[in-house]
Length: 356
Image 1: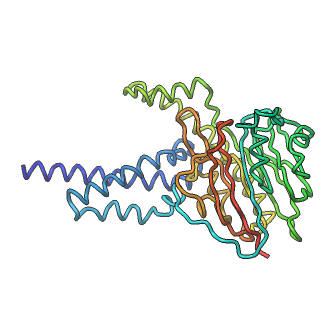
Image 2 (image 1 turned 30 degrees about the horizontal axis):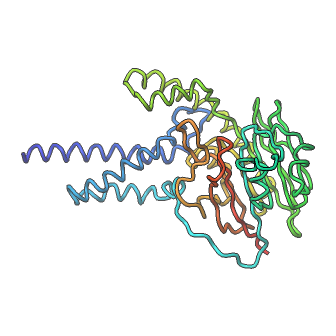
């Protein structure tokens, strides 16, 4: 029995070392260049799996062999910034006398944005946005024209829409004057980013609304993913999993180049009076999010709570919608609003205080 006990502990320790390596490799995969190593750059998607396994080993060693509990604790200490980026826990802050700005970002999934008939307000995106009382709204996957948006949102005096190669586009609805709007140039067949210059008080603030490259998982791919979860036999996981992973890797590589373009524009306009938001189609531990967020505050990491999944369909749950703010802003609160389920995304909003 003593030999068996040593063998079990040896296997458990080996397993914990493998988990520790996986935890750190997945967590820091955002530093892998996706253009040259697209497969490896996708490893961040496996981070929650290794997070749970490391937590399991923490309790396992507490119960079975406390002398080894240092290993999962050390992993959490080294990777604490990763844990906080993925699943933060925070308290809201009180304002300190500056200008309050509520910013909301929402991928509306090409939904027709029109005012509802009386009695049909529930679940209507226009009604939701009107009741949100946001000062600035950034929308993605917009097919409505600028004229249609002005008609649907009379409470927002400033409306600009930037279209892409197809009917798809992004839009900004604002209670503050929009001085200019332009597309950020990068290669994409359907997606894009737009830069808006807003006048908030005496200052000009730069706002970038993003809809980075989609993963292009069609209905068949999503059905395949569901089937893998329901009946994960070895051969199916090997063949289908490889196919899906390569499809994700292709999109990650495209987003990397797009993120580099957006980051370059951010650096040109300056980090202080900068707001960046939208559907990045990438997790908090991705190259795209890391590069774009460089020099900025991540609103959800600073003031959000929990994993904050903003994509919510087909058994796929990820936080891929982000809000970033420059140093001229204090982040008071941020949350993913699950009260509306009309789109395959939840809206994300944050309350900012512009420093005087």
